[in-house]
Length: 262
Image 1 (cartoon, one colour):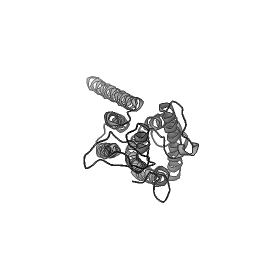
Image 2 (cartoon, one colour; image 1 turned 180 degrees about the vertical axis):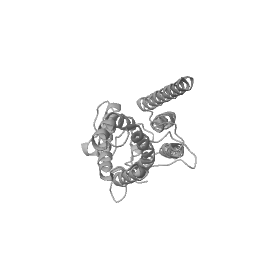
Image 3 (cartoon, helix red, strand yellow; image 1 turned 120 degrees about the vertical axis):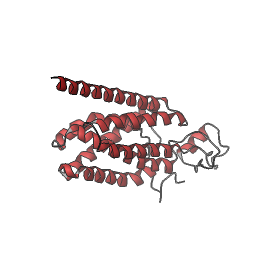
Image 4 (cartoon, helix red, strand yellow; image 1 turned 90 degrees about the vertical axis):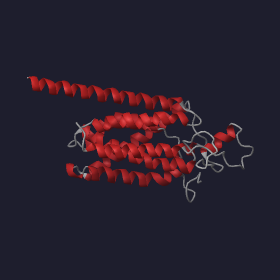
């Protein structure tokens, strides 16, 4: 494994630019028939990514009880939490879209953003694999991975006395990041397929909350060390998305029935 990334570059720094480029290209090409202005879309996504990064960092600090990594430069290596990124995008996305890309309907923007985020987060999990974070409990199967000294899981095992010497690798652990990756990829592919069959704009975004965060919430049960805030936030987000989706579908049925009888 590569706890410091490749060629001495941390995993997150190594992958963040390719992932950002992929996300922008995917978003623009997916909406190419909607006549959006490409450069404005790029600006919107860059600003949204900046807000997502800040949100993920703030949520990470909240989970860590506002304790910073030492040295402080290690904050740039990781320490990002998905719920904070999602909350930041939900809060800032509509305002940024209205300012930068007003010609694109908000609900459609959220639909395509949801699909883009699925694939982007699947790629982000490669940095989790390289740095040894977002792992499960120790295991002994042939799929379990052992990480080199300096990785995040190695630090956790060293602190808990699970390894005898700092020179030893970590214990083999469940590669939970690959399960997160599979969940994001699977939900993204399903949402792309369902997009042509959607009943209304905004349905894909709500399905994203239900499926993606629901799957993530279930998988959080296997995270070691377990972080209750991550599981609770994901499950609550999924529940809110499901309630909103069912309420809108019910409202649409009632309205259609009223039109037929009227």
